Image: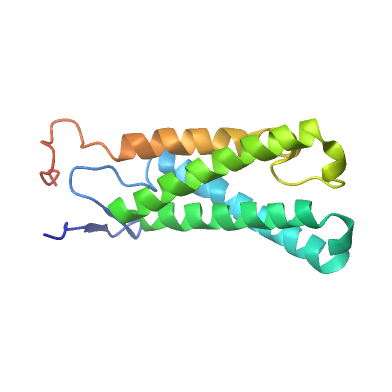
Length: 159
């Protein structure tokens, strides 16, 4: 049986019965940050790849990958619903693993990264937000997947 989604006319998002809207409340702040990071990471990487790719191809491709992950999370938070929440959970987990892996690699062998990536040194160039955002995103997505208080599991929330 398909789950019914209820549209939220003001925000253009949908909420699963018994769950919180992804792009509402703290999710709205996450949505904003991920939107900004999408534009920043993608535009930076596109300029770097198109103008000086041979200088640091790995770093620029990693920044492009970060931008794509940010874009996927942004769209998932904006769309809302259970399927989007699952996509965002997987993407935030991949982002966190990427930040940690690239952070460790840039500290262990900085010569492999002649130029900074979004995730270099755990996101130090972005005030560690690349490390903080996926943690906050995972916490929000976990909370957003729970039924509203007073609503039985699987039941539709009260209007």
